Amino acid sequence: MTTYLGQRAIFPAPDLIGFILQIKGNEGRMRGDEEHQEAVFVFESLEDRVPADHPLRRIRRLVDTALRELDPLFEDLYAEAGRPSIPPEYLLRAALLQKLYGIPSERKLCEHLEFNLLFRWFVGLPFSEPAWDHSTFSRNRERVLTPEVFAAFFEAIRKQAESRRLLSKEHFSVDGTLIEAAASIKSFRPKQAAAQHQKHRHNRSRRGPQDPGAGRNEDVNFRGERRSNDTHASTTDPDARLARIKGKEAKLSYRGHILVENRHGLIVDCQLTRATGTTEPEAAALMLGRERTRRGRGSMTVGADRGYNTKSFVREARALRVTPHVAKKQRYNAIDGRTISHDGYQISQRRRKVVEEPFGWMKNVGGLRKLLHRGLERVSGVFTLACAAFNLVRLSTLTAEPALPTGNGAR
Image 1: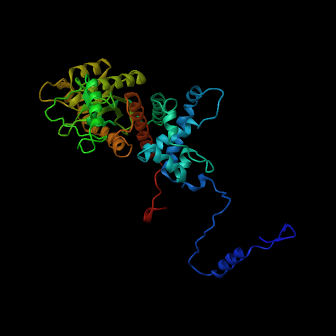
Image 2: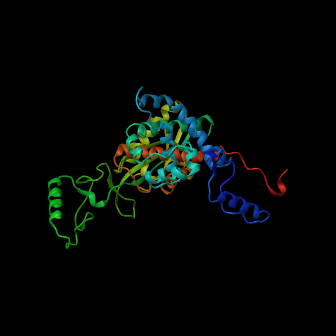
Image 3: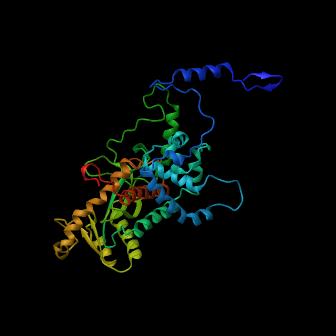
C-alpha cells in the first residue's frame, strides 16, 4: 500500500495490482491457478469438514455418552485449585483413537493431532489450539490413563450395548490368547544371578571395540541352557512369562482373556493375567462369576475349547449354574455324555469361534501384536481399552442405519 502525508492511501500496491490483472486475464480458462497466499480468516469449523456419514461420527456419539457417565470419576481425580490441565476427555479419546487406527506410538499420535483435521475433531481439540506434547501421556498415565478408568469406560460401553438389547443373556464363549511383551528374550536371566549380571556388565565395559560382543545389544548364546519361569525372569519386564503356542517359538508374553456373548460377538468381560499354564480356566471362572452376578438368575452356557476341559473348571462352572459346553477330549474328558448329546452343545461349539474375531482385530488393528508398555497393571489397562475399542467398532456397525436401495430397485 502507498502512503500520502502520513496516511494510508486506498490504492493497492503494484504487486497486488499485478495479481488482480493475472486473475482477470485467466477468466474463461478451465485450469485453475495455484494460490500461493493462504486466507487469513477461516470461518468453517471442524464439524463442517467431517462427512456426515463418516464411521467415526457414530463412534464419537457412543464415546461421548460413555464419558458423560465417567464425569463424576474425573471430578474425583483432580484438585479443586491449580493450573488447568488437559481435559481427561481429550486424553481418553486420543488413546482410543490410537487403538482404532493402529497408530504405533504416542509421539506419532501427537503428530497426527497437529495436522489431521479428522483426528482433531474426534478428540475435541479446537483448530486454534496446538497439539500437546507426547510426554503428556506419560504424566497422565498415573492419574487418568489408569486400569480403573479404562475398566469404567469399558463398562459404560457395555451398558450401552445392553440398553440396546444387543447382548445375549444366556449363551457365551470364552478364550484366551498370548500377547507378546515388550521385552527381549535376552533379558530372561536366572533369578538369583543379579551379582553375576552386574559382573557381566562390568566385564562388558572393559571389552574393547574390537570384541564382537561389544555394544548395547550384546551377543547371548542360550544353547544347552535350561530356562523356565521357575528359575528365570525378565530383567526388563518381571511380570512377563515365557510361553509359546504349539508349533512356534517361546516368547515373553502375557495372556489376555475375553468372555463374548454369542449373539453379536460383543465382549462382555475381559481379564489380563500372566502367561502361566492354568490361567485360562481360572480367568474364565472369574469372568463367569462376574457375569452371573450381573445376570442374577437364569440359565447360562459357555462354549470353550479343549484347554478348558478340566475337572476344576467344569466344577466351578456348574457351581455358578453355568452349563460348560467345552470341546470334548478322547482321554481325561471332564464333561458327561448327557451334556454332549444336547443340541445346544453342538450350537455352542459352532458359535464359539466368534471369540477369535476380537483377538484378530486387536492384534492386527488395535496394536496388541507386540506391547509397548511393561508391567501387569499397565498392560491390563491397555488390554481393557483395546476390548472397549473393539466393542465400539462392532456397535457402530450394528447401530448403523441400512443403506438406501440403489439401481432399479430404488423407489
